Length: 315
Image 1 (spheres, rainbow, N blue to C red):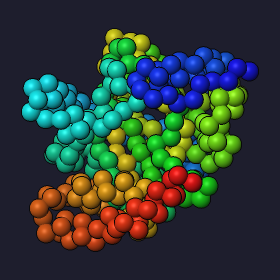
Image 2: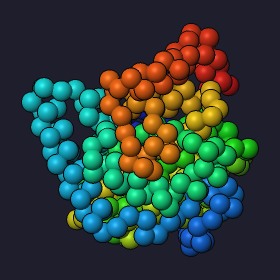
Image 3: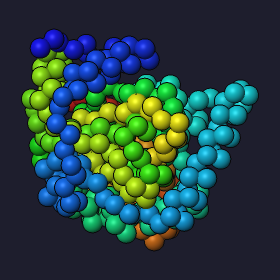
Image 4: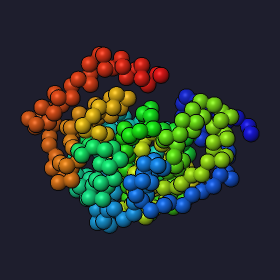
């Protein structure tokens, strides 16, 4: 077994790593998706949930995202805005954009509709009655978008309760040529799999021997995953655009130190709990209740908390 390169800095370096990983898993077994259940989410770290959003909601949301993306690209190109005003940094960004969203009416409607199905999964997995939304956005990849290296989204150990869950919602049918997300089930709670990311040889063995699943799914369906799970965006070799609408949640009744930045994101969005979003009830950033909630979470900017997070993530 030939050792694989580890994560390299820079866009081209990341693509080289991803291409080597793809070659290593050429003969790895592709797993079918089991029925979505709480047990599967806990053990596998990911489930696929079909037909979650209506056709009308999907088409309206996709049109909104296309319009937002066009305006964002124009704003950056003209110098009127910085990339960070509109976009989240994303691995292997060629032909791939991660667009920030706020609580526009079409987005609020989509979240409320999705939570009718996702709510029980998220509450049960996080063991929290009222989780907080931390991120909402849209990821677009077009023809030529390269594969990403295998990675996890955070450094939270998931041997007990997950710290964060993210839903990727398909805004069109996604087939194998459109760069579906690759998931390695069970790696969120597998210490050997996680540490293999620091060894070229161990990573090669993991990719050769581990089964994986692909996020191929009909429009309106979603993959809901534990953000500590190893996964990667695939390469889009088709002439079709792939849009994923996404939203993430963390526990609202306990503080996960390693996810401090996610709680800061929740504050920037106005500290909205799932029970509010299920009703389509959102508040402005100047609303009195929003300000009170942001003040309640102000402790996350305490210097001692920051230092503890640095120690935790470094360790």
